[in-house]
Image 1 (tube, rainbow, N blue to C red):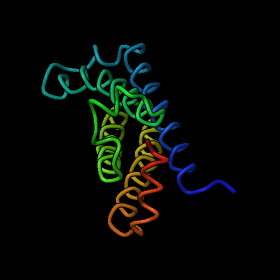
Image 2 (image 1 turned 90 degrees about the vertical axis):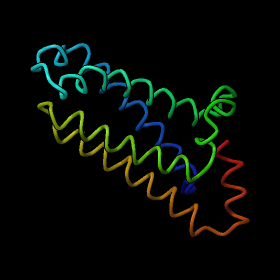
Image 3 (image 1 turned 30 degrees about the vertical axis):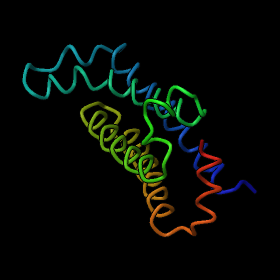
Image 4 (image 1 turned 180 degrees about the vertical axis):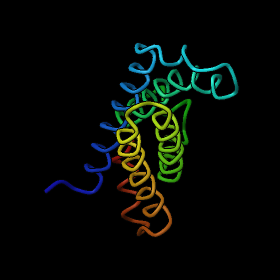
Length: 139
């Protein structure tokens, strides 16, 4: 039976790969070019690039890369990861709500939201000794 921290790591890994794939799919399908020119066009044009960037950041933080620890320290804490996952959930739901595959965005968004919520619960309600070991395992 996998531990809680292993489940969170796998959830982050799968979510980060899915975010990268969503961004690449949106760019390849050229849906960003065929929307009407407005504020939503601005969001639709740049959001796939941000999804790819944030997916890479989420993936790299899960792999304990030194660059992420030095430059994006908020991803090394439970509170930072929780808030970042909830933010990414809102981006994933928004991006795919405009596409034909709404259900994929809601599934990925729900997965990110639940993972972020669990990180927040661990941060605010966890036992301090267990949290220290979780933080060491997270990176």
